[in-house]
Image 1 (cartoon, rainbow, N blue to C red):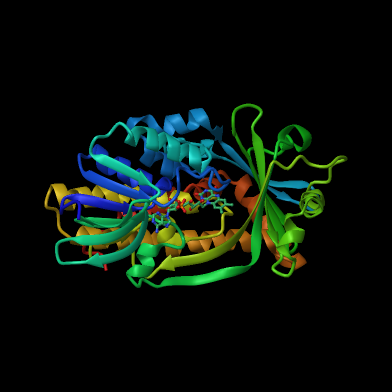
Image 2 (spheres, protein in one colour; image 1 turned 120 degrees about the vertical axis):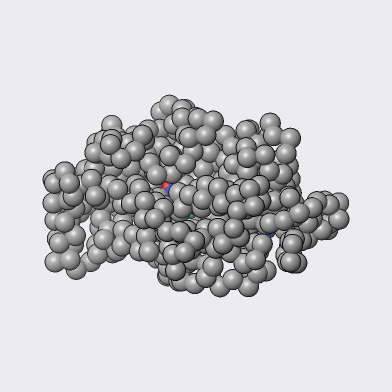
Length: 409
Ligand SMILES: Cc1cc2nc3c(=O)[nH]c(=O)nc-3n(C[C@H](O)[C@H](O)[C@H](O)COP(=O)(O)OP(=O)(O)OC[C@H]3O[C@@H](n4cnc5c(N)ncnc54)[C@H](O)[C@@H]3O)c2cc1C
């Protein structure tokens, strides 16, 4: 048996677990993180990092490093796919008095994770163990014990607290019998990555959303290995279509051509298919176990809010856990963490991400017209556009939960 009460154990070395480890380490706490993979995963998932999240990544200029290895995107657009019309364009510059970061940064999540891992590697108080799978969790009054499987067998590690940042299928959440409430979308989401330059060819900005009756597309640019970068397109894929057909060369060409007709075949450098859920854990805290990131909440990627929520969890949790462990702060701070972050997940991220999807895929011509007219009107009115941006950039939800205290019910 290894470890003791002042050690924080973390399950999961995705961006959220690593961020928790780094921020706790910077506050002088001892941390041991376990991840079942051999190293960081480079699959094409999150990239969009919103202003409210960048504000939380200011320590040691992490946000600036992300902008350096990623792309700065001040503008996003809504397009009507059938007519080809640019419906609305929003410029984060309207938030210049609200945030020091009036733009989003498109930084692939494995690059963010790498920037954090490099920093963690310099900390003697933080251990990161890849190829270590957390398989069991048991709590006592003053400690939490986990069983971890590695090449040399199964070992028990004991700490004062455990952070479950082990993704949507979280073993920690399941071991603690915390319900994961919500639903799964019947359609899958397909990500197709291409070097096709949508800006030069079609005038799309680095983040563009497309409405189409019964369908939609997110199209955004990432810096990849450097200029000229790559474009990722995300589409729904019917549950009735066999996976082999969806993922075939003919299937991916048909899908991307149906949205963005081009005279020759697209060069597709990655294709990935995801099952997508809208779920939130019933609580983010059970005794000495705290959930963060996808382990606590998952949502569809339209609006790019999943990892943003996870990063915000990490910053909120670390601040409170450090107060409890280092400054003998009240234990209820950890309940406040759960209430604050659950409120953002339920009242904001779930609601907004579902509404974003419904707005883009609306079939009824009258509803479509109203949806698109509303976007046009908001974009044309500076005050309404600023309010809209405060919500999409997640500043409004951060401000709202900041007003909650340990006495807020
Ligand atoms: C197509 C797509 C696009 C997206 N775009 C965006 C976007 O633009 N913006 C945004 O904010 N979000 C986006 N998201 C969501 C984002 O990818 C996730 O929210 C993010 O990965 C969550 O990070 P995490 O660290 O919580 O979990 P993960 O990244 O899933 O990391 C969990 C880690 O835990 C490890 N693990 C799992 N089980 C165990 C175990 N038992 N023991 C040890 N380790 C374990 C896993 O191997 C993994 O390394 C997108 C998602 C998809 C699918």
